[in-house]
Image (cartoon, rainbow, N blue to C red):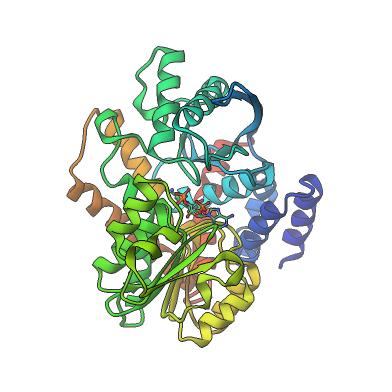
Length: 448
Ligand code: NAP
């Protein structure tokens, strides 16, 4: 790494102690930027990178709520508005007990470059809470969302900051959040949140977009080697929004997906995951993944979390779609030895740095999350367009736009990696292409 970048990275670590995921995300971007800082010294002179690593605004707030037994709970809410050079802040909300400031900052930092790559006019942000929705009743989730929005509403707006979903925040939670926003502000401001239900301002394809997009990106990577998804054996982790839709799209394109997981373990279905059964269990009943094995019968194996990982299964394509750092170097080695050809990150930063290095050394096509999972936020931007024009597009039209956007992101990453002398390195291509667009906008806007 260039000495100036290394010094700046040390400074970021010092100013943000203990935020290991944020440090990891910053390192991953900086490691790609040597050729850029050499080619464009004006960025360093204008302090562009230092400014990019410091969020424009960080909001931390108390979220009090009452459970069904009348007991009061206190959670912590976050919104980190990282960069608005390209447009209003945009990025999801995560509700998970592991959430702390470092989680939100790593996600928000990634989001700057991801949103830039989509080509849409959106800045980068992320938010959430350490609230654990698991095992909570519908009313408890609603009361929590209402309390969360009672503070958040002051900071967001269709021209300011537009949150969406992430882990633990799906259509149900967006509904409660939007309901409370509307009630407090007395405004039907559809464009303030994305991921809304279709009957009240949402976009068709938004629920499917991240998973579908990750598979479209994989298909494009495979195409560079004369391959396709057809006939691939795929391992997927997770069984939430991104995972289920990735499984669905991969199978539509002729692949066989043999795994799905949640935090309790994974299932191996040699015949290929039955998406309808999985949707019923996870989306309708909100059940555990072991139930899938019960319903599908003895041909399906359930492996509890302590006894193995999805990555123990042989595959030609891998799609990690659960959470950060879920795939390490040992997992990578097993997948490489089993004949892995391509991996696309449906989740944000699911692969550790040494796993990524192993994949790249082995010549595996590696699609980083900020490019491969950008379909979700891109379709959120399409939802904002529809809201602004009071329009509602058909499924086919929106799906076609998503396909175009993902193909364009793929091509931009591929061509940028080539241009900067790192052919086939999608990590470098995504980081550089994402960075340059934001940096140019920041240069134009002056020191703000
Ligand atoms: P989700 O619907 O809440 O599903 C998350 C899945 O991952 C669940 O199966 C969950 O299992 C599992 N999981 C979460 N934390 C885990 C942990 N610590 N250990 C093991 N399993 C864990 O969330 P999602 O929207 O699909 O998001 C998944 C990933 O995609 C995240 O990295 C998110 O940032 C990224 N992403 C999402 C979008 C989007 O549009 N939703 C867009 C871009 C990127 P349990 O239910 O057992 O916890």
